[in-house]
Image (tube, rainbow, N blue to C red; front, top):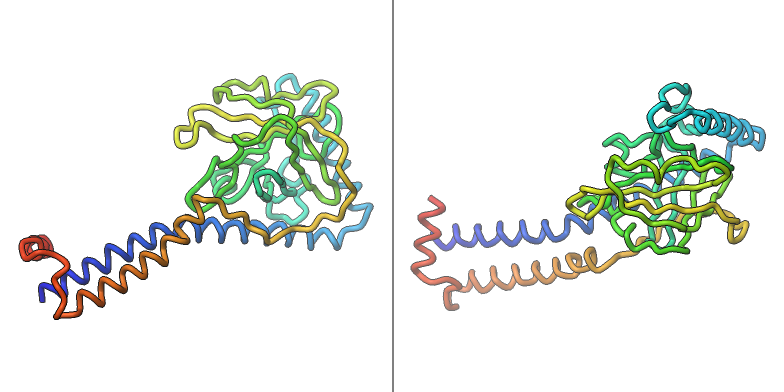
Length: 287
C-alpha cells in the first residue's frame, strides 16, 4: 500500500513537471499557427475586393490621418474624430493588416486598439496615432506585449538594430520601414511617438525591461521604398529558439525516465528507490 502511494506521488510529480516544460512550447506554437491562419483569412477576404474598393478604403484612412495631424495633440484629442473602428476594418473583426519582422521571425495580425483582448493574442494599433496607410505627416504606432507564456509577440524586439527593416501589410499595400531610432522612455514620455511634419514613421512599442515593464521600448522606422514588388504570401514556418526547443527535447527524456523509474519501482526484486525512513515520512504526509 505504501509503495503504491509513493508511486502515485512520483507519477504526479513527473507528469506535472513534463506538462510545465511543454506548456510554453506547445502554446507558443499553437498561437503562432492561429496568427498565421488569421492573416491567411484576411488575405483571402481581400481577393474579393476590387481596385475601387481599395482606393475608397485608403481615401478614408488618408482623410482620417490628415484630420488627426491637424489636432493640437493627437494622442490626447483623437476622441474628437469619428469612425476609427470602421476605417480599414474590412473583415469586421477589427483586423487592419499585419506586421512582419523578418529578423525576428515574427508575423502578427494588427488590430484596432490596444485592449487586453487584442494584446493577449496579437499586435494592436495605438489610437491617437496615424492609421497604417503611409504618407507624409503620419506616425503609426503598433504595440504588442514583450512576451507571454502562450505567445512570443514582441519578446525579441530589443534585438532590432538601426538599419533593420519591417513590413506593414494593409489591404493591397505593403509599407516598408527602416529602423532609424531606438529609444527607451518612461510611459508618460510621448514626444517620440508624435507626428513629425513631412515624415512617414512607424514605431513598434513594447514594455521593458522584460518582466519589470517600468519603461517603454520604442523602435521607430522611417518609410523607404519596397525592396521588390513581390506577391505577399503568408508562411506556416515557425522559428523555434532555444527557450522553446529545450523543453521539447527535455520532455521525452523525462517521460523515458518516468517509465524507467516505474518499471524499476514495480520490480520487487530491485533495491527500493527510497529508504524506509523516507517511505514512512511520505506515508505520514500523504495521510
